View (cartoon, rainbow, N blue to C red):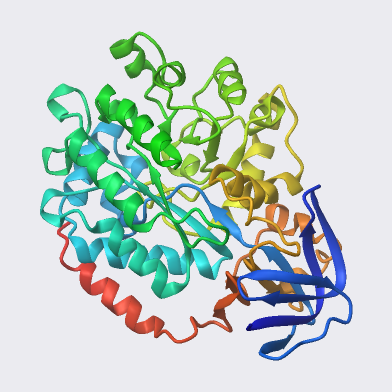
Length: 456
């Protein structure tokens, strides 16, 4: 069986299940999709490729737990700047653009987002694809799986959808609406076609109605029934300003509303959650519901900083997400580790609970994300775990004075460049500034050509 031997790594961030630790000057050996050994003076057997890893810090691959890949096509547009528009103005401007996208746009935006994620150490990505314009058809997530296979990304597809018309209080144009039956039927099709629950799976499906304010109650009820029947996860947006609207409609805020519907538990995780009260966080902790914290939208949207210290204190499962380009113009999860830590430091004096240590933020981006996605086989480096990792060559001026503490390097200092190598499931998918076997310039040109079909 093929494998890789990384010789003389300056540091490997290992985790045997009891928390991360640093091992210095060791080798790392992979076999097939898994890590076989981490230790000194390891030998390469037949079929094993040996690499000199002198100076490398080797980290577990990052796990992205919330994104909207299709939004990559609206990045860096001054006309869509949150800071110059009200939320309603912004939604009225952005959704008509989203509703124009065709199947090729969804494919190429997925390639674009995944490529950037991989370059910056992300090895597993969850995407919340809730935009299904009628003219684009139903095979949009199929094309996302195609993009993931091209790049070698471990991909969890969140099949989202919107069912409540704008005339009944949603923000969704009619061109992006589906019925509950349409939505559930396509979720079931995708699960049957792609979902693989085996260890080292590269494809999984999550039932993920977009958000309670844009869906009928029955959409969430049916989502719970399907997910529990098929043994897949549930996901949606929660706690990003909608709770008063849900309270007006249903007599209770979002967390209690979803608890009542059964859309909560160890098989469910919510994105954002910045507006939630401590009592609501305790409710989520009690049910085992997780949180995907997306720190970078805080800069653009101007919302309050999510209370991660309280979540930590109450025992919530926390992962990290990039979020879509409508509120974050990059797909760099590694940068989110740094942003998440620095934002909590910024507001530390206003919090009841202390800021978690930098090591905890590395954990949110690795083991925390793996927990949200129900993946005990990823998120840490140890024999038997998936060979998902990335390496940084620290023999650069950027790292002088920082190398004594590899665990805190990314959250505290930040990494301003692409990784030197990213490996997923035992396969090197990015190294020396290239995607092996792929022409990045052509990928970019094809994506730009697809983008040119959209009118802004």
